[in-house]
Amino acid sequence: MALDFSGRVAIVTGAGGGLGREHALALAARGARVLVNDLGGAVDGSGGSASAAQKVVDEIRAAGGEAIANGASVTDADAVQAMVRQAVDTWGRVDILVNNAGILRDKTFAKMELEDFRLVLEVHLMGAVHCTKAAWPHMMAARYGRVVMTTSSSGLYGNFGQSNYGAAKLALVGLMQTLALEGEKHGIRVNCLAPTATTRMTEHLFPEDMRAAFGPRAVVPAMLVLASQDAPTRTVLCAGAGGFEAAHITLTRGAFVGTGAGADEQLAARLAQVLDRAGEVVPGSGSAQGANELRLARGG
Image (cartoon, rainbow, N blue to C red):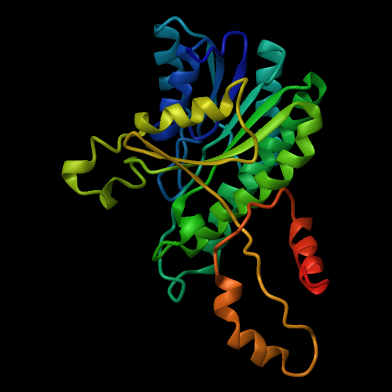
């Protein structure tokens, strides 16, 4: 059954090229009206031009779809509020938000300037916060919303030279976990997409003979599922080259060593048991950790 977005209004950030462009084109092709946001800057976030977003809007309109352009920086909370108002003033609602905008400032941690660390956090994490904060009241009022955060394997599992990027990307998973809980009663579902794709940010990382297979279009099905009416919630969906996986933050069954003298030595001696993944679970909320420790304390 084809995923249908007819009548839906979507905002896609960082949609002037790469993954964001493919997301915007795919949503529009399936009936959504799309606000295409892009600052039009370089990979490192410098510069800016509205032409990138407008070019994608022109593509959508040429194909018979509806779209408008927006050049706001996601780091500017006031500009993001105006962006969401632009979508609401134009089409009366906001149903889908794809937080895709991002930059890279790669260096080893020892050589990285704190300014570069902060800026990457500002764009990826606070950019998603600004956009979601602006769209959230409209979704609550409509009792419907789909928010897709763009995380990364660099955040989930680490990547050399990307401490700033990895920190920001895993923070988005934490944001998703809580927003999914808070949004559930309002009909808002929040998920994360972890793409592996060749874009201008990443193409140099792929062998030349594999770049076509890892094109950004291969990631789009995962985004469409996470943005759809029947989307899951609190899901980290990984995608690349036609393969799809789910990532989870799990909790092992653990071990009880008590709090008395020698607890540190006992923990060191039983660390293998604590780390044993047999019987691990995916907790429903943060309180599950405390509940598990209570079970252990009671001899369970």
